[in-house]
Amino acid sequence: MKKLISIFTLLLLVLSACGTDKQGTEEQPKDTQNEASHDGHAHVTGDIQEETASADVLPTFLDSQSENIRLVYQIAGQSTEILEWMPCYCGCGESVGHKSNLNCFIQEKRQDGTIVWDDHGTRCAVCLEIALQSAKMHKDGMTLKEIRQTIDKTYKNGYAKPTPTEMPA
Image (tube, rainbow, N blue to C red; front, top):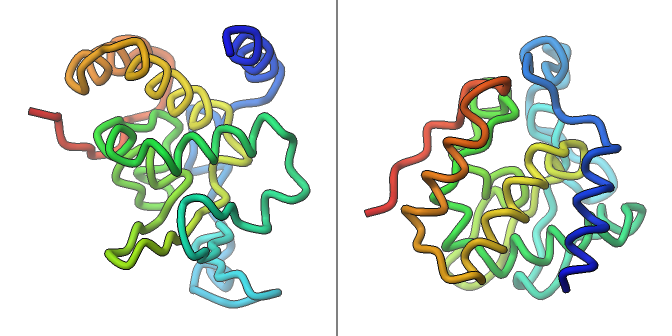
């Protein structure tokens, strides 16, 4: 597992991040900002969203993605109770209305267990890093509040404004 995380961290350094100025890079032309359907996927503000029966069933938009990105999505699906408390610092709070890092991967987790996945995280190293770091810190025994404080401290300088995420108790 440590080797996989090290390889993935290296990959993340190579990938380009969403950027610190999301308004210029993610904003879509007005005619594509409304919800539309294409190939069975809903498009909201440029992101592809897809519903699956559970977090164990990954969306088909990941089929063309690297194994590392699919792994982070799998981790996000298993870590919703962690990521809902972690802000994202890529600018997606302002550009696409995300409320936490969870929304970079999952738009909605329904009571019946179905998941509405979002492809935003497939294009953003910052989103991927925060999710992976948060899950690893939780596995290492850190509390939600400790993880949140670490994420906030790590990303407070040089990144976009964080999503409006509530602080865990």
